[in-house]
Length: 494
Image (cartoon, rainbow, N blue to C red; front, top):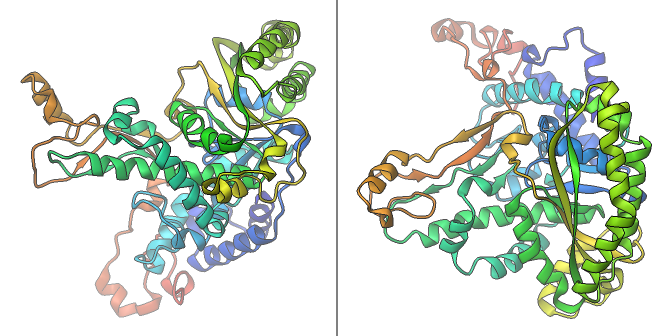
C-alpha cells in the first residue's frame, strides 16, 4: 500500500491530502482497490508470525505503547489490517457493523461532498501514521492485509464460529458483564464498549446483544489470522478469555489441546520507535530468543497438561531465561542502551494453547466441522509438531488506551444517576455496566473507548454563501472543503 501512496503522490505537485479534490480521491480509491485485489502478502512461516487481536493489529499505524512495541522484538512477523484498503473497500457495506464504526469511503447516506470531506479527514490522519511505520513494513516485520473482503467472503464460517463461541461463553450475560467492563469489549476497529442500552428492569437482552458484537468482532479477527496461517495473540484479558473459553473447546472437541504459560517475564522497553525496532529486530539476543521460544513450544507434550507444565518449566530454566537476561543487559549496557531505549521495570509473559497438527484433518464433532475448516483454510504448509492455536500476552497492566494513540475514554452517559443511586444505597437499581433499572425516556450509553482517526480541521463543513453558490452553480465553492470550485472537485461523482 505504501507503493500505491508513493506512486499517487509522485504525480502531484501538492502532497497535502487536505486540499486534494474529490475526483482525485475517487481515483486514488480505485488504485487502492486494484492493489488490494492483486496483492499477495508475504507470510514467512519460519518467522512464526502472529496477529495481535483486540485492536493493536487493526490499528497498527496508531501504535505507540511500550508493551506492543516491545512484543514486536519477540515476534518474527506481525500480520496487521491495512487501514487504507479497508476504508475504500465495498465489502464493508455488505456485512454487519455498528453505527459507530468507521464509515468508510462510500456510506449510502452521504453525498459526494460529505464523503470526500470524511475521507480527506481520515487520510490526513492515517497516511502520516502509516508512513511512520514504513521501516517495519519495508523490513517485512509488519505485513498489512485487507480484511473487509475476507470478512465478506467468509461470512458464513465467521457466523458459525460466532455461534459456537457464543454458546460456550454467553449463558449468563449479567455474569459476563460483571466480569468484563463494557470498555474492555472491542466491537469495532475504533470502538470498545460505548453500547447504547435502554434503561429498565431487564438488562439481560440488551447486554447480551452488546456482548455478541464483541464476539462477532473477535470471530472475524480470529478467522483472518487463521486464513493467513498466523497465530492469533491476545494482548488483553477479554480476548484471552474468548480464546481460552471459546476457541480451545471447539478445537479440543476431538483432540488434545493444552495451554502452556511462559512465566519468565519478558522485559518491556521504553523509547522504542518503528525505525529502532527495525534496526535491532534481528539483533542476536532477540533473534535467538524467538527461535528458541518456538522450538520450546514445538516440542511441548500435548498429551498431558502436567507434563507440559513440567517440560516448559525445565526448558525455561535451561534455555530461555539466559536469553532474556541477555536482552536485559542489552538495554542496560549494550545496543539498546546506545540507541536510546531503556528498561521500564515491567515484564510480561506468554501463554499458548497448543494442538497436534494431525487433528485438523480429523475433527469429529459435527458442530465443529465448519469452524475447523475456517481455522486452516489456505494455510500455506502445515507446520510439524504441536501448533499454537492461540497465544496471549499475560501478567501486565497495560490497556488498549495505553498502547494506541488517539484513544478517548468515554464515561457512561448516566454516570450522575449511578452516583446518586449509590449514595442512596440503592445499588440494585443499576446493571453491571451502570444502566439504570428505572424506565426512562432516554437511551443510556455505557462507558467506552473511541479512536478519533480523522483530522477535525478537515471534518468541519466550510461556511459557504448558499445564495452565491446557487447563482454560480457548479462554479460555486465545493462543500467538501478543498477550496476549489465544485466543477473541478466533486461535481459528477456518484
